[in-house]
Every structure is written in C-alpha cells, then in structure tokens.
Image 1 (tube, helix red, strand yellow):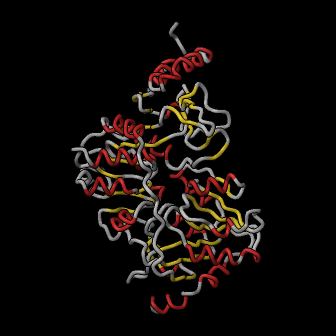
Image 2 (image 1 turned 90 degrees about the vertical axis):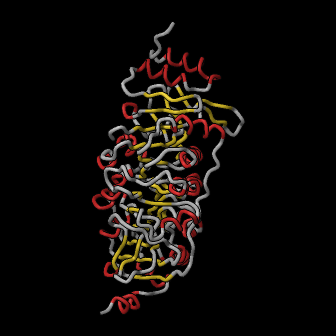
Image 3 (image 1 turned 30 degrees about the vertical axis):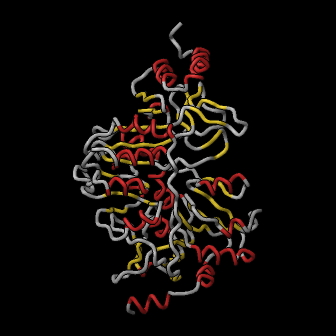
Length: 442
C-alpha cells in the first residue's frame, strides 16, 4: 500500500477517531501550544458513554471542553504535569490534579511507570516521507506513543515543521487515525509585561552574562525583561539551550546576539523541547535549520546541560527561606505551578564549566487584602512545596541585589538573604534568624 493510500484509509472524522477511547483509559492529550481542538470537542460529545477516563497534559492554553462540561468528574479527570493559569483555576474547583515531575525524567516515568492507552495530539501535515512533525511540542510525546494502544493525530496546517534533534516526528505506520483539522491556528501565549522590579532584577543577572554564554530562560515578566535587555545589549556569540522556546529568544536572534558558535553540543543550533508564544515565534520556528527540537530527557537532563560551557539558567520562584530552600510551585498547600525543569537546570547550569544558575523573585508580594509580605521568610510557609533544596541553590536575586549561597554556612546564608530582602522586613527577618539560631551578630 502506498503512503497516500494508507493516509486515506486512516483519515476519519474526529468523532470516529475518539471512539478508540474506552472507559478506564489514560489519554495523552496536550502540552503547551499543541492542542487538538477537534478531538477535544469530539471527546466532550462522548462523555455520557464513558467513565473513569484520565487525561494527561500540561501548560494548557485553551479551555478543555470535556473537563469544563463535567465539573463533578463523573466521566473525566484532568491530570496536569505543569499547571498553567487555566489549569490552576480548574484545580481550585477540584476539577484537575497535579502530577509531580522532574521534567527531565518525564519520558522515563511514562515508559516505566505510567499507563498510556491512547495518544490524541496535534501535528503538522505529513511530509513526502510519511512523517508527521510534532512542531511546537516534542517534550515526551514519543515516549507516550511507544506504549499506546491507539495513536490519533489531528493535522493542523498551521503547525510549524521543526528540524531535529530526534523524536520530533511520527511515521504514518505508527498512526492509527488521522483527523484533518485544516488551518486551525495555534494558541498565543502573551508576553508578560515586565514591571520596574522585573527590570531591576534582570539588570542584576545581565551583569553576569558574557560573550559566548548559553541561555536558558523560564517564563514570566522577569525572563521577558532579561530577554529584551540581552537583545539590546552588545553581547555576542550567545547560544540557546532551553526546555521552552519563547519570543524573547527570537528577539535575541534578530538583534544579532545569538549564533551558537561557541556551543559544545548542538553547535550553531537552538535546542528546545516545547514552545509557546506569539505568531512571530511560530513563524520563526517553521523550517528553520537553526532549530534543534529534542525530547525533554535530552534538553533538560542535568548531565547533558552540564556539557555546555557557560550555561546560564534563569528561573523564578514564589518564596525562599533563610536556609535557602526554594518554593516555586505553591502558596502553602495550594498549587500555583509545577516544578517543570527548574531543578534540572539548577543542577545542570551549576555543573557547567563557567555556568551559573539564578533564582529570581521580587522581594515582596501584596495579598488580596492589600497587605504586603516578604517573599524571603525565616521558614518556608507551612504546606509549601520545596522545589530546590538548600544545597542546590546558587544565586538568588531580588530588586535589591544578588547573593551566591554556595559554600555559605547557615548564618552566612541568613545574612546574605536578608541583605537582599525589602528593607521594611529586614529587622523582622533578623529577629526570626535569632530565634532559629542562625544569627551571629549581637
């Protein structure tokens, strides 16, 4: 049978394709900007026929109709491996649950410990060799496909075709059903507008970046500010090695800051595992030979990341205590986000020759009642999740400066962190440090 004959045989409607889902199944569905909208609607139409179906995904940027229309979870449950703002709202209503991950290990979790019955994902159109490109999301899709009973792909004519890497596509021989989605576009992730505080924090980090550095950025206002500052700087020969590709990297390339010429691996190429941003980003990615799309157990593995000289990792957090423990996932017991690859890059960048890792946070936040609180605390808030343990943290940065915690004693850590806390809270933090017996001054 020719490839086109095979294609036509497997091409069905969304409603026909999702008949493959059975009660009790686990379904790999969406990650980031990769979202199979026709399949989502078709699954919703099947809900009365099914029960105890678990869906898995993360960083969701569009509403999940089959979850929203089943608020009591009589039929479906959403399991998020990295909470977006949308998923966080679902979790607050008991309509979604978090699946804790160390992102570099996710493909292994799926292959060795997870159940995957059906994969229902979005892809780019088939090429002349019979391959469907994963486009904006490589991540763990190949691992999920390896163990699945049924593989359904929804073809999006607007999905960029990206260069690999490896495990960035699937051959038609491994696909069971094809749903043609036409030009369905991609969800846009708006760039967070940097605040003045974000810019001050970014400025502290910028001074630590040098020609030839390789950059990993997280998501949010501060990384956006840093990306803009790098683009407008006189830095040169920068590289990119990141889990998430965002608009800020495009700005760096267009301003001539990035060429990857000094990278030890993937020389001249920008390695990433998933992407989300504006149409500018998606256009930049399409058929761009400077892109290298990889599964996340390559981009994020600390051993791989540490091979890259001058790897600079920049991530944000919710709070940090005076011992250096970092919470980036919750406010007390209430989930905000996932761990993602933060710990991966904290480890990888520190072990890179000339590499540095930064945990960035505004010194304060204001609650719903208008009261201001310090994000640097004597002890971590009760119930908060520890994302980075105290020995792993290197630089901590607020708008008041940066400190390096590596090699510091408990009292030195307390002094350093209090020195970059908001001035209004320093006396209070000193008092807490004394109670905790980590303060040597009289």
